[in-house]
Length: 515
Ligand code: MSP
Image (cartoon, rainbow, N blue to C red):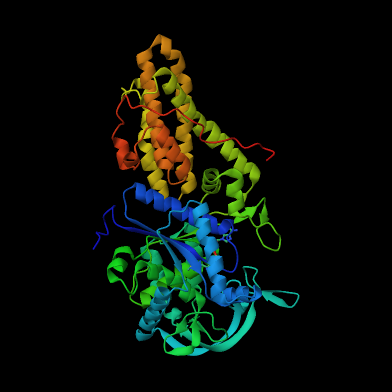
């Protein structure tokens, strides 16, 4: 069994599984991007990572979308699920697994979890009568609704309908105290802290039992022993995380990967992950996940994104237009992770031009061109640190740790902020020490300055790999860093002097403001 205290222990990172009622949009790309960056970072640390994403294919909403498309639900989900796999390729996601809830292994896991809950006396048969929003696949209390033109709406803006049918219930009400204890004992279980407080307030206000089966439609996992019912789509969907970890078929895998280190979710689905999910798990005698991080929502040029407004952002079109790495960088750089943020072309162009092209790209280009021209394209030997280098070298030394601390708490924007600050210092260093002028006056010192700058670029490229994998691979190639020396651990071993470096090529293109 892996030692839970070891920093090298396996690490299981998940995204939500996405509804296959529609094509992927920026929100899907965003949640998965954050998970991808953390997964890539953990691999750089040397950890054994399982990064999971997938599609949520059952329920009324998907059934309705299939019907509207005039298709059989399975054919429909096969088709739409593929768009999410394609998105993962377009966005450069490094997921190790992709789960679909229509797979047999998943149906077995749902049945096993249900049977365990039933055996533990956590489920009873009753009657549900109340409001349901198909768009959210969620039940709402009457006090949560607002009414316009005779139609009632959930807080999310989704219309609700009255549902009355026999239903199995999960004894959620009995879990409130144990949930509150979970939050109290694990202050980082729900991040960011503001969201944690919301969840605590919600649980303290009292939890009712939860309807976990439906009889009015068929597109779901049948309830074991009672075919008239299909499982509530959220019970089915949440179970994906343990299915993929090996439950119940592969106990060794399950022991290795579970509990998940982190579930990345949007703020709209936090309640399901931070309340229902740990309650189901604890009720089945399984450990809750270690963390649920709820990120905010994007608006488009200041407007709420919605299909009816026609302002949905297509991630594939963005990547086509601006290139993958600038988009990956922008999404995690622009907005503090956890807060809402606005997508604007002007902001994207400003980040790309000011930070990627002018700060990082320019630094790489200047340094590598100087080495090419003045050192016959060979890396100068490891350099002595002079008094005037101290400050800069110190900043570089602590950078990987600073990035690690930020990523451990999912503060992606602050990790990037720290890297950009160091890159600006490097640009300051090159200006102050003017290696081009040293060529004639002090060539030995020129070699030192260029070597320090090369070392700096190596650090930047290494820690930026999770954010911009393709461009940083190019930069590491240009820096002459061999494949096996691109992990964080390798940073403490200097590259040998004399290494022949390939000719530099620009890394980032500026985007015209009028674009
Ligand atoms: N199927 C459920 C999740 C089940 S997980 C066991 C679901 N799917 S979804 O297709 O609606 O995807 C939701 C994800 O996209 C959420 O993390 C949500 O927050 C995110 N986004 C949807 N629109 C968004 C924005 N405008 N901005 C940022 N993310 C948003 O919910």
